[in-house]
Image (cartoon, rainbow, N blue to C red):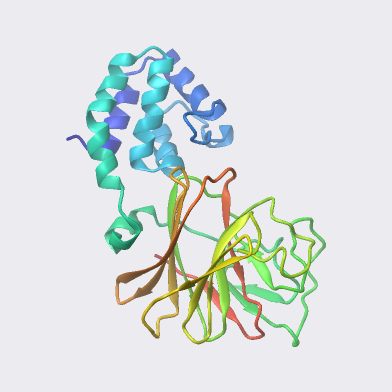
Amino acid sequence: MADPLDLLLGVLDDLRSAELRRFRLYLSSAQLDGYPRVPQGRLESDDPTDITCKMREAYGIANSLKVAKVIMRRIHRSDLAERLGQNLDGASTSAQFSPAQRRFTDVRQYACDLTLDPNTASSSLLLSEGNRRVENFKGRSNFSYPPHPDRFESCCAQVLCCEALTGRHYWEVTYNDESVLIGVAYRSIDRTACCPKHVVGQNDKSWSIWCSAGGQFIAKHNNIYTDIDTEPSPSRRIGVYLDWPSGVLSFYRVSSDTLTHLHTYRATFTEPLYPGFCVYCAGSVLSICQV
């Protein structure tokens, strides 16, 4: 079986210039079997290599082949759609893993860089280290951030990342001995309501796990709490795997290059997701890791 990315690139190379332009137009303007479009601003050229890279970022490897197959039929290149279909089953199998079976080699290929968005940070939070570290100075200091419509109220110390995620992505964070919430949220999450309505995981626009100072974990979504049964561990490092098109969001405890599955949400995501963190205890510190 051909390498999926090489296969996709080869198929795009076989398109004529006009066909490639139509392919890019479909990719940026149409809803394709439930997969989100790639924003026009991210598809600035008709270069097959660039389009392949952007599709992988948006959809992951196997789903890129599925989307390409749909578009090939729409631009009347069934021959190329069939070529993709011959390799699709094998590519899909190699890219899919059950939550409990995932290993570092499975998820690290989807590692992404994240930065905290200062325009969302509550006034008690200090961002540092290139906006990759956040600390709660509640009771010690309030920071004079300028007014911004994306900023969360100060009552629950919270911040989102800048990056809007679709496709497949993986990231890790560490936290100190204070409790934190780690999750994802739609951009449309309420910013003005006081606790607990706008906290990540306590509404229908966000999903999270609560990591307690004592090593316990609780999954939270739409104010529904699910206790997570896991063995005690000194690890304070959490991995998050998002498969947006498949509606999968998994959380892992990370220690000694080992992933311990904590919880998986299955949902139909309707908007891009933003990683978000609530560090509501005074002295709470959370950092985004380099994976």
